[in-house]
Length: 133
Image 1: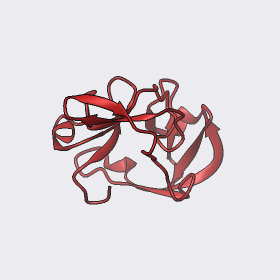
Image 2: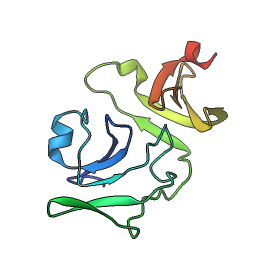
Image 3: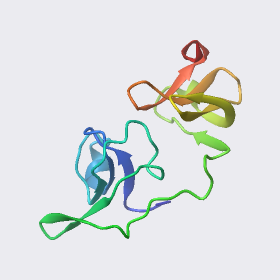
Image 4: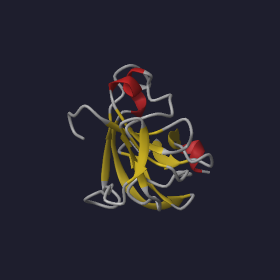
């Protein structure tokens, strides 16, 4: 949700979660939220995960097949990475390549020196050209 009060993130439990400010305050190092998909994602993007989403209703979660997570462009042709507090060399524009890592797309930095890709543990990673090999 652009400029919103909620965030979609990968929880420490390996599930896609939609959470609020309390999750952001913990740098998303948590496994709770308002909506989640119970299926472990193993690096599959939230718009491609096969599973029913659940939402908090009073004190318990209810399955809700009407919840849909989608992207308008699959995959995005470019990504903008902003890193104001460190690792500025990773910041900048990344362009979609023809490469695939673990079944998912790879983006290359405009300098050609780094990539955004899915690692063997299912996490999205920004790595140098040495990671490409």
